[in-house]
Image (cartoon, rainbow, N blue to C red; front, top):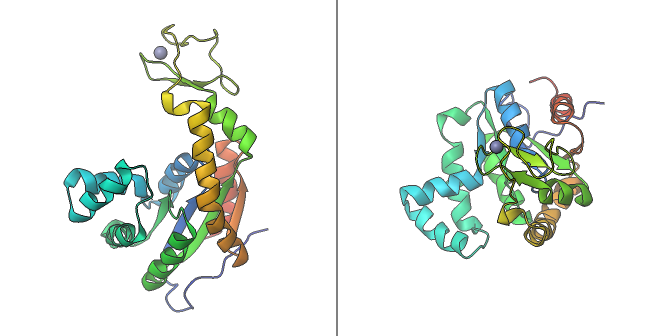
Length: 232
Ligand SMILES: [Zn+2]
């Protein structure tokens, strides 16, 4: 069944066919992979709010300087800073035919303000949740090992090297990055649950959430997303 969501705006503004595709999902669910695929297929940019913030910080913009203090403290950048940064980015010419949002909204308040921003722009919004059970996520994230020499990455559960603990390409001893340690991962997943679940509930309540089984292969996930998006 193809689910078409209610456009946020009434008819009339739809002809342009531009759409905003919002990718939601816990860390490790494959959002950036699917974002890349969507961008290729539809010729629209992926907007990662993380990259956007880092760009502002690097350029030393007024908003970037303010955002940096929150990021350094490991806090969520407040909407009063995030919204203007996002609006500015979305008004650039490459977004005219639509865009993909990766990593935003993260909270209920952000979901609500995104609705307002997109309504102003007259874009149809498709909210896609890549759903992955937390046990699998833990294995995906904590099982990751990387080669310090060639940067190739493995997963001890799903994609192990031929020889335990050694890189297939060069035999180097594989390492676990410190931010892949179980304690750090659990905290990240808990933060996601606490912050983002209310946003997901909001989309569910409005009948606008497209839920995709994110435990399938990336190809299958991509095919299902296309099916749900329907023709342009
Ligand atoms: Zn290697």
